[in-house]
Length: 232
Image (cartoon, rainbow, N blue to C red; front, side, top):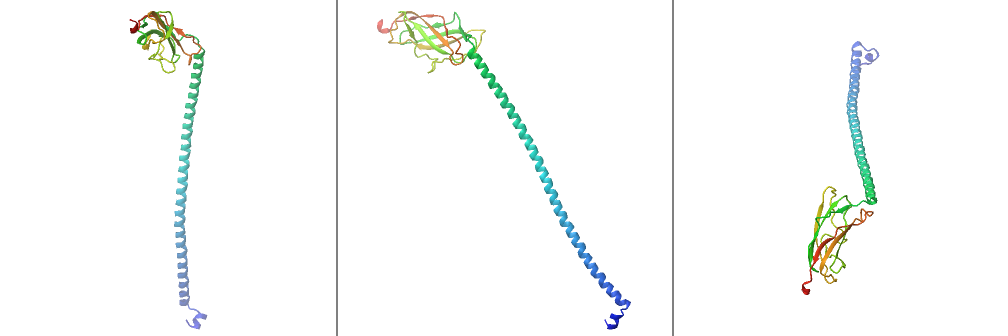
């Protein structure tokens, strides 16, 4: 470009200059638009990530609330169970206390159906007792006695139905009909048991669960005490 064209540009020169300016503006605007589009894409990705995190947090909070409600329901049910068990235990304790204070008999022997087999000192005999169980008082304490031909009182030994504490077998209450029990015991040897007609009887008490109940004695059941073989 000549000095004359610089000082007095023609329309062609001006057109070229405007073209250059237009091109530069187009490049700048394109760069700006590209930057904006890139920025919009990144912001959109970040926003989508934020929305996902918000949704995840909301879902976790919802699940936590549901879990807390379920735990509260379980705790409520456990509290109801504990309350019912406490109430039941209280009732049982009251019944036990009432039963302990109750002095009415738990058993009544019948006038028939009992028997004791004959035997010699040192031998095993069979005993059967007939009774009516009126109410539950747990396992009875048994004292099994007999009077020999010389009018002396002895205790049967090795009673099969008794445990080490002298407790017998507990029967279910049934006031409407008689029940019976049979077991074995030994006539003691070497304790001065004299042969002849004797009778046996049993005393039953319930000191563990019904201490207020007096002991009950069976009717006298007669049997024969045979002489020892060495005396024959």
